[in-house]
Picture (cartoon, rainbow over the protein chains, first blue to last red):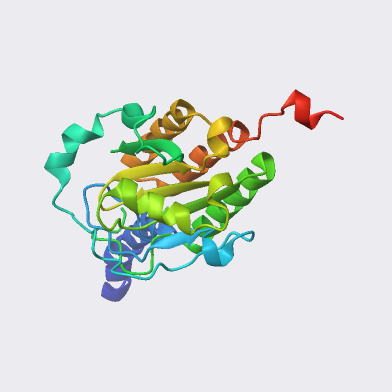
Length: 108
Length: 135
């Protein structure tokens, strides 16, 4: 076995195997794109499915206004306590008089 | 190994995720006969008031349900119109919110939205009124 062949066999082959395994591990996350993580900042544009412009045919609509205004990545500590708050906090009848819309709120 | 760092502008969802959410919205509307709307983005001011403002912009707010998710502020708001409230109580909406909250806390916005829509749709169906709905 020549020196070149030995080098290819003992160095090139392991590097190739490592590269293939790395690619296989990273492929799903590369395919899925960026992922939301509660502890990190959110800079993506607002999206509205079934908004006023797309009423009847659900689609997306970028909302006008300062989309980055609410990005607060440093709320982690303060929100921890709020995260345990159950969604039913304002479940029943806490809307203003005359306002007949309802619903629920939650945070995580 | 996943990408680390803030979600870049314009990339809230992949095309497939968008398609899934749009389909879940369409399915919910078909099942319930109500209008569903999902807004994902930062709130300006109080999340509740912002969500109610968005709900008011819909074509028929009284018969509409709006789900507002603020990923940065970690807030979820479900707003139901006055007609929808007759069949979908605030307590039922709160149960759906808990379901969605669980998925959001793990970072899966799409699954949370789909689960919430699937849970809300059958509950939002108009209640049959015997004296008006039967011939």
